[in-house]
Image (tube, rainbow, N blue to C red):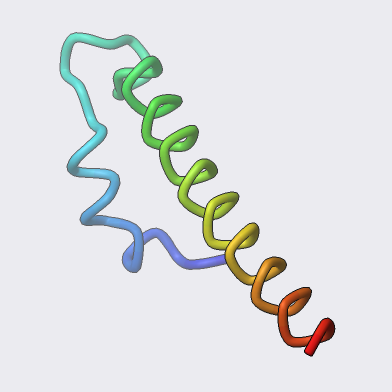
Length: 56
């Protein structure tokens, strides 16, 4: 697990003084979902590339 110092830039982006937990939970979840979608797209592209090379 990364130390907090390495994650400080992200922590500062998601911190919210208006939230009792110090972050905007909806925004954080949106960031996570966006990143997961990006990972899924990259994985699909890799799987397609492997399949194409196996069929050659």
